[in-house]
Length: 310
Ligand code: FUB
Image 1: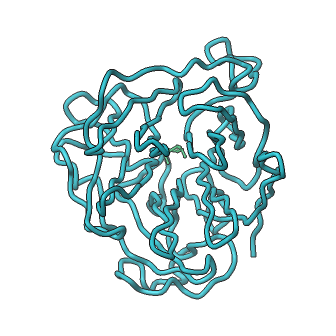
Image 2 (image 1 turned 60 degrees about the vertical axis):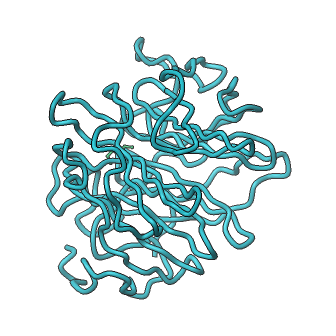
């Protein structure tokens, strides 16, 4: 198992054992990659599947960074469930963004008082933390998970999240409050593809949205059709739609029944982050994050990608 590389597990700013290949992190199990490009580096925010996890046992988040997508630095765990005094468990899939020199990390955790999933927000002065609870209470709570954040060219920031629905709110400039109320994005089959066999879920959308804007087009790359998830995507001409389903990015493969996408451009390349069960002892609750370099097609569509190892 993972005892084979014991070094650097909790170290801060330590090199990850040199590895140019996938999985990116090979000494602990990681999941739900969320990359952030800042100041010439890519910071990778992940969850941490505990050894022996049998159901998403996740107590903390982790940060890694790289200047070249080959050599990765371990920044330890600058945020965990305990950062949020109101949270009880489940450090699940989040995303961090920079605004005004501060770093905001949106994450789902269980609210101890309600027993439901809520979205908390950590804030830090550096991409590697330490992060503190920005609010002392959830930013928003409706029992749903997997926040993704996007700051539009206009400066308006949007937070999207949800399983089984897809929600958004308009964040205020402070990034820790919002205007209006949480709004559902209509899950239409034209927008999110057609799922058969589940009357409650007519579209492929499952969870894990990753929303960004590139060359004037808005993308939502998401986990499709539990429970052998694949990654699919939709595009729109505006930040709240209407969305058009564009097909598969990464087919089901890799030994984890979930997958979770994060997409960035970095130093002239485009990179697709995901997770699988490729490490020794790996599986649906002992996952590992990985990355594929790719090129958008001329029309802005994303090619179909395969997982690589080794
Ligand atoms: O890692 C826990 C959950 O599994 C995430 O929130 C989902 O996106 C799925 O990856």
